[in-house]
Image 1 (cartoon, rainbow, N blue to C red):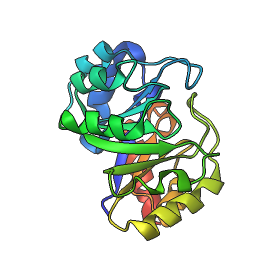
Image 2 (image 1 turned 90 degrees about the vertical axis):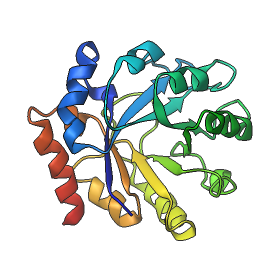
Image 3 (image 1 turned 135 degrees about the vertical axis):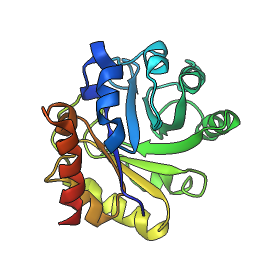
Image 4 (image 1 turned 30 degrees about the horizontal axis):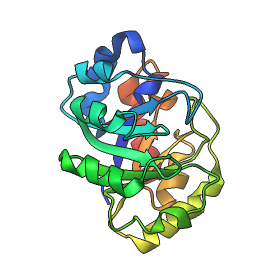
Length: 214
């Protein structure tokens, strides 16, 4: 599986998103965009207009941490903002199959995510319908949280079931934890503070890639 690094702009400077994205764009594979509604998780994050303004040659990986991705218009809005893939949570309150259908109708790839306490069995029935599974390795809502290693068993099981599926991990990923996630079977790595909190962001991205190889 191809290794993909997805810097999370949740840890970037919101006042200069375009500049921060351009800085890491040559070294990254995706731009990870965390969208929060203030209900599914307490914070709120980016508006569709902010994301639409970001010009980038690499894919926008939009992660909807929202209660109602359909009813509240999030899928429509972030499709319009240029999402390449939209991932929604199994724990959301809208119908999952209807959400998949809406995303695909817009020519966008589909992802499904679960929080650390949610059993993997809740998403096994969707594995043949999605382009990516996102395993949260922190409880969602805030950047900079500590990695929860117990979720690695979920990754191992998904990789056993779906050898060719993209498996993304998000939360507490740094040069120490990325190797654990890669060895478990993840191949898409969301990193926020491990990249954007560093002065030399190119070096930070390559440090993550090098850590996987060790």
